Length: 177
Image 1: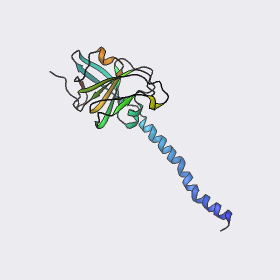
Image 2: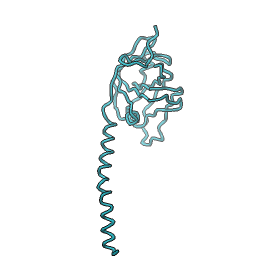
Image 3: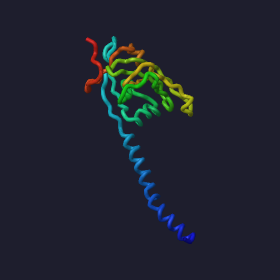
Image 4: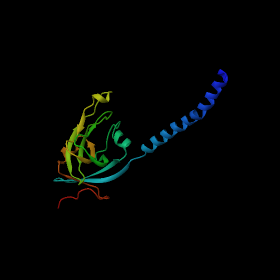
């Protein structure tokens, strides 16, 4: 086979493959858009000795929503937060970090009964390198985590053992009588 004919044959075999490339790129873009959809919001209450504290929270349920979290936010309304939900129990060693997060946050780790099992205060990480940002492990197994403005829990006397309930859903603990 002469070189020109061989080149034409190779090109004709590769042409269908290159035609597929834009579709695969478009497909991944479309999937990315799906994961970037607006998050669900819901009302929840934290029951402590100081009474119920009501919050309107965004719910991060997908991997991409949980990875993004509150990154890039310059502020968070006082009675707002983000609830990170997981399909299964998370290890006590699993941690959150503050890479590209601009505001200080408190985080409460919540067990399957809706009880707060750990609370951490997290400071923004100003480093441009993710590996330089500290991580904040729960120290106890958890099913969800609630991020709010830094100082929120201390200011309201919210502690480990307090209850988080979602009035419109089952699955979280009920306030103690």
